[in-house]
Image 1 (cartoon, rainbow, N blue to C red):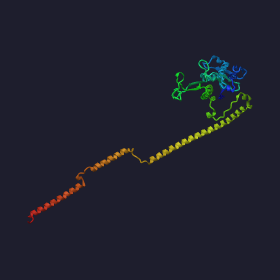
Image 2: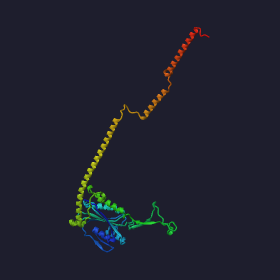
Image 3: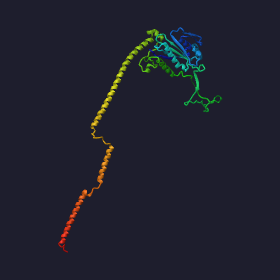
Image 4: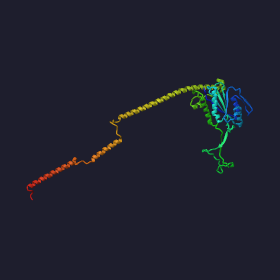
Length: 384
């Protein structure tokens, strides 16, 4: 089963290391170190399955010779603490055949390192112990278009937030300094010639290796560059054993440690399965409770609505809107006022009846008086 392993380190003169000797050991080759005059011969080394050098287009053709390449590196890196090379060690999926492993490493090296200007020297080691892996040595200095080594650092102008050059100010005059030949002086900074040393690169290179491997692996065998903790997987990682420990077998403390770790992981896996089942049952229970709660709420609403329908007065038709009821009431009130204000004919009123009776009584009195006067006149009238 494929495993993920990628380690990154530097080969440095300050550690007493030699780029030529390192390249000879990893490639199983015989190389002469011109710096020390020694010849490093590892041609009898067992387990070197394949070696290759990949160069950017601007690199001299002679750098395809391993001895020329690394002696040229050591000639250029003269400081006592100089970094001579950067090295990657990656575990290869054991389920891939050799040709596929070679293509996997070649393409990964080309895309991640050579296309960015690095010279790469890599070898596959496989002792048929189930631990195939590759060593990738990389130059730390770029090569210019003319084929010469570029500096590791370069000086460039300091720019402000708007991208403009920042002037050097004379503290005495407060004006920009003027250099030789009347040229204005600008602030400068020193920075790396390349971005190869940026910390973000390491994470990207690690992720890219996993992606490159997964291109050839079945879904159930895919690997991940993240730790188990970052993946959210509760598994204790095993430690790197190495070929010596593998040859010792159970007598090796590292092998025995991994046996114990694997046993513990099996127990942990069983517990994880049980916990997962409990969590699933709990989720189902919470979901059922939520459904019942919603059902109870709906039934309570339906019951309350039914009660309001019973208590509401029955209506023969739809109730008139409030504004229409008010308008009808005002119309009826105004009509009643109009009837009351309209005068009633005397003959149809109580006052008319009273006047008619009063006229009748007056008429009767006049008639009686006229009769009395007529009688007196007939009798000769009153005496004078």
